[in-house]
Image (cartoon, rainbow, N blue to C red; front, side, top):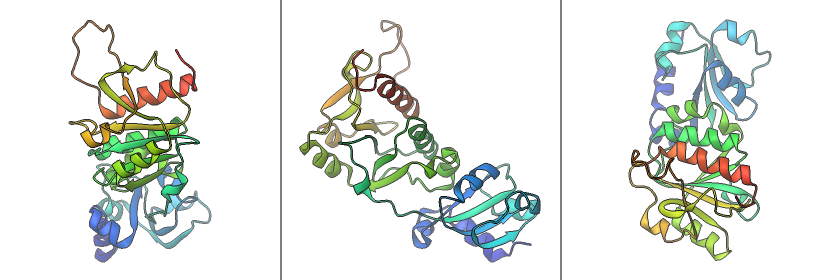
Amino acid sequence: MLSKSKVKQIRSLELKKFRNETNTFVAEGNKLVADMLPAFECDLLIAKPSWMATQGDIPAKELLEADDDDIRKASFLKNPQDVLAVFKRPAWSLEEANPQQQLILALDGIQDPGNLGTIIRLADWFGIEHIVCSQDTADAFSPKTVQATMGALVHVKVHYTDLPAYLQKQAEHQVPLYGTFLDGENIYTKELSETGIIIMGNEGNGIRPETEALVNEKLYIPNYPQERETSESLNVAIATAVVCAEFRRRGGKTG
């Protein structure tokens, strides 16, 4: 049986304050936890005996058997699975994110944890290894975001920094800074580079003026057909998918 103190400890990690204090985060689900175990240090793992039996040697500091009721009490999911784990947050260095050598995503005030998780998952799919976020972007290690990543945090490093200052530094090194705007150039005809930074903005307000001032390559995703009235804009995660797919399809070529 899982103690009340253990349940309280796990449930407290729903809040960023306690995740920061303990430098930990929660992951749930049979596949997600199995994917993360080799990549992150595990402080605590609770699971049904049937799941444990399929895993062999489990690298967790504390390993507890649990039943459905135990997992339900600790879980953040509507339909809990067989296992829940508390992992140490990794120490990723922003210095590793070099947009002169690779394509990087930058997120300017993304607020929805589901959108952030989906974007991290998209980055993994398109081979983008680093995401640089403004300080007010949603936390990549919140339970909702971690679940939405579907394990992509194993391959994608997420950094938080003063985004305008970071972009200013990159602009001084002639790094292409791409952003999507209604007055940008058609993404399907504009020349795209294989390196640089793709900036995606807040769900409601888009890219902030101070960030927009640093963008040196404005893009536009046209609707189809272009003369037909449509909804005002795309969801930010959908727009990210469209942009990343076009960059990877083109591989630095035009048209």
